Length: 201
Image (tube, rainbow, N blue to C red; front, side):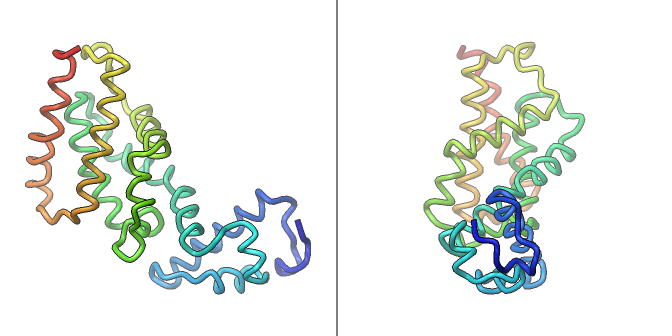
């Protein structure tokens, strides 16, 4: 790792360099209302664009990494809004609705789902390994007694995938239902499927 630049305070290692780049990217997103240029990030860090390119291949990869770094905060907010719900179907129906609402206002994760940044890679990532990891993390934060409600590990995996695919579809379509209509739809679509799972096991 080169040590010049960085405003006279070079990072100790590559991990710190990446963390600084992501922190400044967040600042740039905040300052420019969601618009960010790699050259502005480099300038704010006191490095050249080539230095940022050593860690991120371009603006889209930089924004994706920024979004991933902010997911835990998003999941904390969602979990906070789902407190007190314990029935699996109610939690997931409300959870998808809350995630859609949070994403519409989120400056980092939500930015990647705007039409000007949405790509097949981003959309596919919702149901990919990373998306599954995030929803498992989300489910682990909630007080759901899966076994007591008759759900097997396979059932929980299916619940996670159905929820992610529902979320993916709603994001792709840019769903414009009212919040109450969205919850009614989600209960009919996702809630019914989740309620049926223990009986099918």
